[in-house]
Image (tube, rainbow over the protein chains, first blue to last red):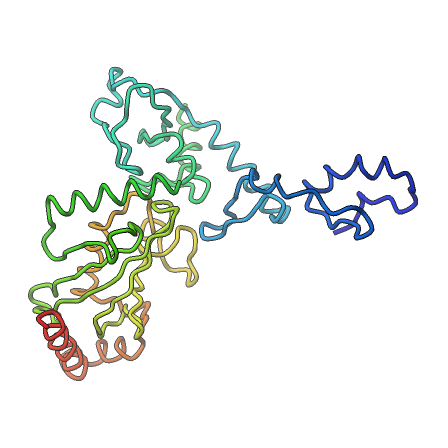
Length: 154
Length: 169
């Protein structure tokens, strides 16, 4: 890792102070001569990622390759159709009453996610799972393969 | 997520109390900790384990059901898929995508729709039908493969007897 954020020639204190917040969010080492680093408030709000399902790491601790893979995964998940549970009036959700992940009944107005295999879940429940494993928990259909085949048949 | 996992586990516990499932019983080790369960598995009929009462602990992670619980037998049990320290090694309790040995299909690994009941069903079927391809207890696997009615049977019978003494103490 290069330390491209540091400019060792600059003696301008105000400049250094300005760059403090940037540095903290990059987790860069702080110069011992400066005032103590700001409290790690940023950390508490930073989301956790799972490069493999059993690992939990902050965004700053991911390798470039992992960051790309996770970004791609987030993109794919966001392209999956979503909706709001309406009590199953349109037929496709008629018999599905319960989110099998949290085992709670769908309530009118709950945000839900539709997978290509037509299984539906609470958006929060399934999105967390898909970040770890890109398969439908009910039929084990790989979501990316199913996405590709729907494009082909479309 | 912590709230969700506790809620889901409480719901399962209430359901199992109301409608017990044949083959096992389940409860909490400590009433204040919903993440630590104690189960007793009844040795399945027509297997070497018949008549045994095998106590085990299930420890759930706070992000259950996204990740599987760990299961450990407290009662001594001689089985190819149970380590000598009691740790249960079956594929559905392995994290998704984490296939150290490269021969588990994704559908055989952990899914967030697994419950205490489905885990127990898998463990009961593991007792009836050991998988010696991925043994956690290599000695037990070897005995079971080479002579299931010899030394293996004797060791299992001893565990069954011991488990009965423990259960009726």
